[in-house]
Length: 361
Image 1: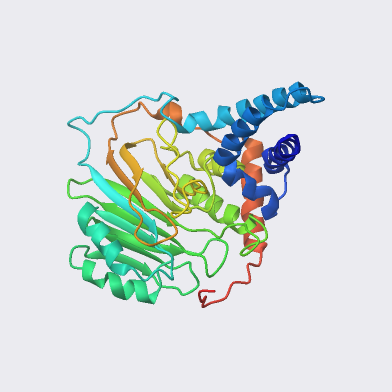
Image 2: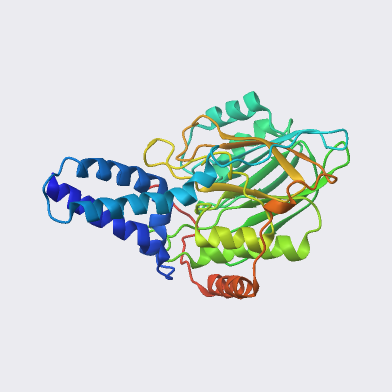
């Protein structure tokens, strides 16, 4: 047991501090995803330590483990109901409630009927799919009668994206910020009660040993969206999708500060989505951010429909006259703006070398 205790303690120490190393290679970025699991394992290892009596340096290690738990806990507690934030009520000047579903469908998932049933049961005004290819587009045609406004980016490289809406899409644009095969959708919408907002769908590539060696394209893509939001949009904004990132990572925080958007997970929950089949190995990588005049009523995951991601469901309303969320907006300083600009450029220069058509292994 003592040997196991030492191995776990050493491994968890390394995993805790790898993300602090300023490198974009996946081995330094991936441990950020597992901060929740690392914290649970630290607690387990701390408990094991109480059974290793009369061992040299035991209590020094125990204190170190406790400090690591506090270190991770300071970050993670913000994404739980224990971190109190103000709840906002609708008034006569607010818009009607709107609902959307964001889902990475997994390109090779053929359980189309389960996803269609999910949409029909929850009846969102908007839904966004990622990894949706030609087969998925064909399967979703049965929903088009209920969702007359659409913007489709059909790709076979696992980065296809489809947006369907009951709300009028006044204008929609497909951006390729860092690579010509990684799209983002920008849709300008107008509700029946006259409220306008912009809906962004994003899906940058992940840093991993099987996909991209570095996080450069991912970070460059999401920070390009942040720059577009801050510099070019003067309407309420929602940015949602499979970020292949966690909310507490350096690049996510830089995204939030650069865009001046709010993370609705703070004070609410982790909303973990991937991997849908393995609860302990589930990370919150399908993210959402919004501007200060958008208020979140509900944010949660829905049931699995055969994908490796759980879908995200959100209910929100717009209120231009409520300034209670202004204090939630954080802004980037001069150094952070320069860092964001550098990461955008690095993302554009990175060569992802992806296949145009991807087949299941």
